[in-house]
Image (cartoon, rainbow, N blue to C red; front, side, top):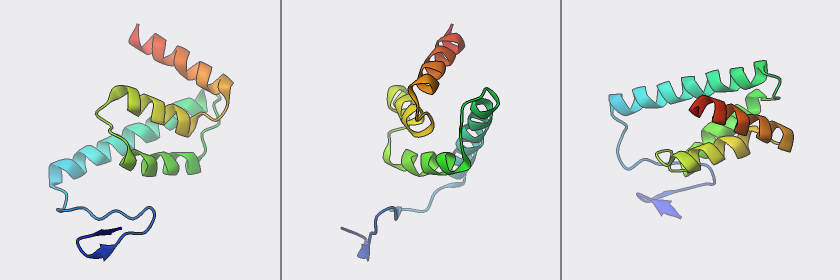
Length: 98
């Protein structure tokens, strides 16, 4: 597959236009919040390795992050490998919503 005449390898992304400063700022804020979320999970005893956070950041490029359910499920699948951790995240989400 080719975008703008350039070959696209698996994982490579070529934007049609450069990002505007406001878009870069939003991306930086999202990355900061995801990092903080990973730290909170780690402090609560859920094994969130730096590699998982990097994989999550890459995966979000393929997900519509404006869709809350897709975003939540992507976080859950990327960061919580075990069912017990997934159950803990579900109860954490319920407490945060209530």
